[in-house]
Length: 222
Image 1 (cartoon, rainbow, N blue to C red):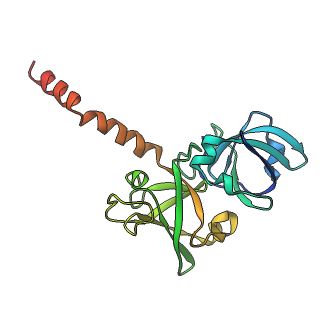
Image 2 (cartoon, helix red, strand yellow):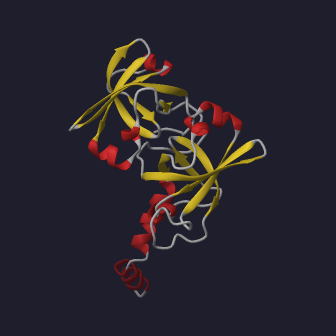
Image 3 (tube, helix red, strand yellow):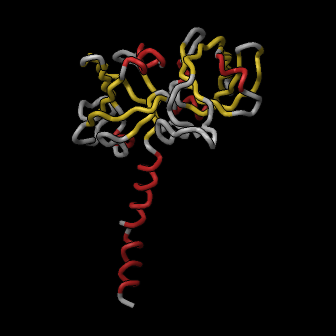
């Protein structure tokens, strides 16, 4: 489990692509804290350290399923990545509960300055936006952020539709310490919605089902 508080801005040293997936070699000061088999969040995706490359380098394999659901397939040598090690039991939960299981990707549609903050507007699929609420939490490329605005209706079109968006406001610290400071219109980012919202929606789907309603009616008549 992670918190969405980025610990280091790493750099992709090498990308090896095969028909089976991708192996990343990443340079970071966190490499010394990793052992083979440890988890590490790379741009919000939980990966397993599969080989220590020596010094400040660590390796990680990215399988085809992860490449389909995330933006990691676009990484190349020199790309900057947000890195976070898993939460320890004694650590503060400064962000929110982040699993590193990316739900999908979003597209940066607009970036604008607002005082010392930078507002980023992102298009997202309606299936993800159902879990996004104003003042709620979301992880964007592994960064825990608060939703500052969300489109009033998700409609039924594609993520490029103007009605399918949400906004986050980035403070100077976030702009400097993460990759989000370099994001612009047209960039693709990884999105992980709040796990609590997903669980609530799942439970409600059973509560409102015909079978559940019938069971509750029967129980109340006894």
